[in-house]
Picture 1: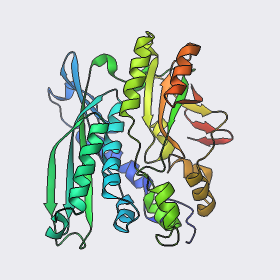
Picture 2: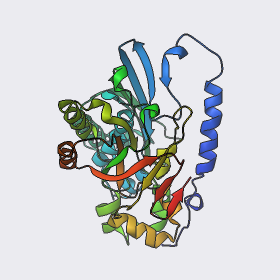
Picture 3: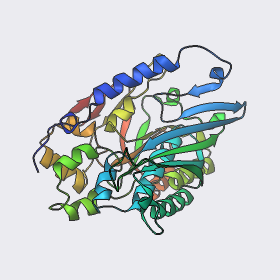
Picture 4: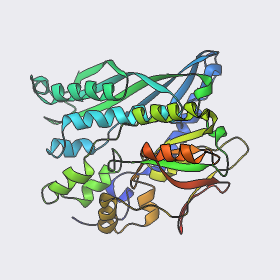
Length: 347
């Protein structure tokens, strides 16, 4: 496959996307209402947070799986795994604001009625969606199925997901909680999850690289809900609930997710002094793309699926239990607005 040095050369303009989000924020910020006074977080956050009552809030998220769909159509992935991707991309985002997933809805659009045959792709996808929701400790409660024969190519389809969770005000993982000196702990990813596939498809051939794609690139997005719950229980058991300062789902734009919001009147930076060992898939992507480290780390998760910010004062016994949950301490928070990995700095 020919080398592609940037995500933009593969057809994805991240700068235009960022500019669009800024315009969207201005559009939706116009006007006022009593409801807006109850909106705690919205556009730009991992999930919208809304106050139902003084002690009960809800959070909502929406996401898709991007062009990972195309390799599934090529037979390199399964509808069941794609379903887990869709659930993961949504419920993992809810976790980052402190919400517990409750319900999930999906949108499926496809070319024609052949997609509806018994035992076909849609049946497999919905069964996988149900199973993934159970693993994510939420319910699949409905959605929309749209036949669009003049819009999609025969056999092609698209999917989106929507998740709603609940939380108490004390659960809210707002960026204002994060303090310099806090530690960054991480759960690994299973692969690139559902991001960067427009670039990956330019680097790997669906026939020549089929085995590598299946083994390393098409693994479904890790569901962190159960691990998150166990972490909360661990901290509560040790009286350390307040030690949990923040969470970051490392998705599109890679480690730029860490810089997506700043506390009021303060700056935040994230330093990974030793870096981390790249998984095989990330090493191969780096070799094939001839891209800079900055381009790679601001597109892919590079092996880190979910990063947590925890108080530096945790006891050694708690730290040992964190490791038993699969967490690794990888860095610290400082006051310089950047992500620093060894000699690499992303601002």
